[in-house]
Length: 397
Image 1 (cartoon, rainbow, N blue to C red):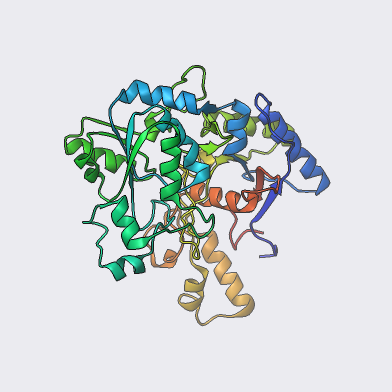
Image 2: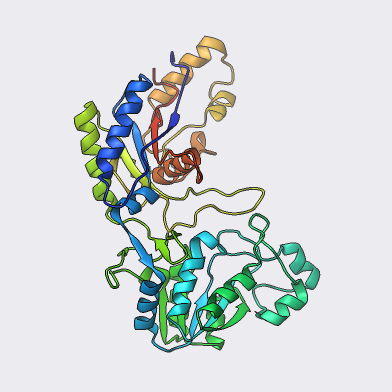
């Protein structure tokens, strides 16, 4: 071991990306400029991450509330829609909700409690305990909720989401009834036409509803899967992964991400002579310990990546080795033994004692989370992330 630095993640600034821009060229040019200015030595298997937002923006993958309304109307007609398990987010759901309401006559809005799927809390577990309410068996109407818990504002945004979502729906001329429940099938007491707004639990929700005899069950991933009046669309995720663009439009999750990654990999190979791995990344998969919010509001961390990023890490736990196999060694002797052991480790360490405590997550989830933390969600202006040394270990010089 002679090198003193391991993995390095750098945010790369780019011009502001607009619809129709050649994103492969812009990213390649921005990276090339950074490589020259920072005197970066390049290697095969360096990693380039590009945020999904600029991929979708360059594609022009946008849809309006009218587009959403038209698809809702076509699929649900004049039926009362049971809209279940939406997350509490102005950025993620408010414009989507506006479009759904514009295409509906009546919505029964079923909110999960005490929190939504990604950890935004309406109320606390302590409040439930105090009132003696079991969230798995108790269905509350809006009056019961208010009588028991009053007004509850989100700790970060200070929005009362019950009032906010209700007002959004009513402003579109749509009638609304708000209920609070945690079993997908509870909505069938109100309507048999259901739109599942949950993200990671959506397939289970759909299955339970269909098995219980629901007349029509769709998810947000089945709305805008094809263009509506020339709109953007996503054949795999529909409205999932969308973000607010304006008060009347959303930016959808990008399409054809694998093709983009391969094109960028080819461009970088031509420019540098190195074969780099490329991924498109969205939300990272991690939980904020203070706010209790699980960041992943996108359907996946990475909607597209090169094949070299498929799989799981296969790593040894250094502290386990130091305390067990090499407990009687120290100094240079310990370093040499550890380096040799790691250099000859098995490719598949699943279940071995030496790997216990390492992170059994997919590479794309780990690397995408690193990219998301590096780029941030505000004004850093670094939608491209360049990572070196990620696949190296203690035995690499």
